[in-house]
Image 1 (cartoon, rainbow, N blue to C red):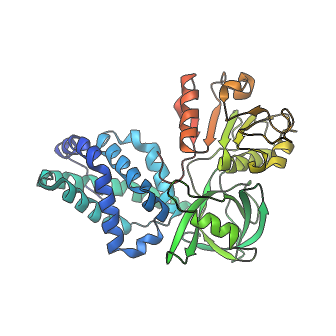
Image 2 (cartoon, rainbow, N blue to C red):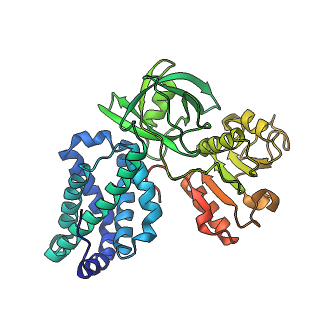
Amino acid sequence: MATPLTPAQIAIVKATAPALKEHGETITSLFYRNLLDANPGLRNVFNEANQIGGAQPRALAGAVFAYATYVDDLAKLGAAVERIAHKHVSLNVQPEHYPIVGKFLLEAVATVLGDACTPDIADAWTAAYACLADIFINREQQLYVAFENWTGWRRFKIQKKVSESREITSFYLAPEDGIALPKYLPGQYISLQLYIPQLGLRQPRQYSLSDAPGNDYYRISVKRETGKQIDMQGLISNMLHDELNEGDVIELTHPTGEFFVPIEEETPIVLISAGVGITPMISILNSTIAAASSRRVSFIHGAHCSEFRAFTDTLKHASDNPNIQTVTFLSMPNDNDVEGVDYDFEGRVNLDKISPDRLFNNEPTTHYYVCGPTSFMTDVRQYLCERGVSQDRVHLEIFGVGN
């Protein structure tokens, strides 16, 4: 167990925060390059697209800066630590990985800062990293213990493929060993791993579970990614859509994630999504219906057009429930789409168009769950908070390396 930081070490770490902000991405880019060159096996853990696009180094730089800023008040980082710990266990990160990461991260700091990295600074950051590693190792151990008899990668057979829209396909995944599946919390995700021949690597991706728990299969619903941002098609999503068929085998880790709805509660919830962000919301919706809950649910979703909108039938059936209201936005309705029948509003999701009785924003117990592109989620959170919703009641599903 790491020794707590001394007041002098805390002061040094906080004092170096501005330098880390200035040079953070340079440090973390060097860190990843050196780490992966020396430990090529870890390329199977990290998302190659995030490395190519620079998202991973940017996110780590932000995390290191945040840690330096709040090293004397780590409670402010609690949500971020929880999210990262769940991501780590979904990738089967183990305690022995932390000394390796620490070595290369601290070496990168020393290289980039040069003479400015005095022995006292190096000592303070070595101690700070050890404390942070302990926090993650301990929390991740708790999660692994809760997983009971399933840790690591487990083989699943694709039982069924179902097209949900022009770009989203659902995969029904049954465990090859036939052992009963543990339940998960609606909104959680799994990691999926495939071997990518052109990279010579296994690559993991996280996908929300898109149905209620309690079945003898897990369902994920995957959008075909074009990779426009980094000029690289989504490796896993395209392989799932084009190359893998019913009967093929993939590997998953235990469901996890800090974004979920406690089904036993009955306070009102508002589910707000865009695009493929609908997937965890369908799990939450189906779970609420399966529980015969009297909870009021408002389901607000935005899609490009009806061809790209998934789970249309699910939402139609859900709206028959007197406790569930659905609102659909289409950015560009087709000529055959009828307003008031096929969709409610034209354009992107605009909460100003939603009546208060559907947003429940006059009720202090309402919780809001948001999933979609990062800018969409942060805009929704800002909108709600500006109208008096406390931030602790707004939950964002942040995949990848977002904040």
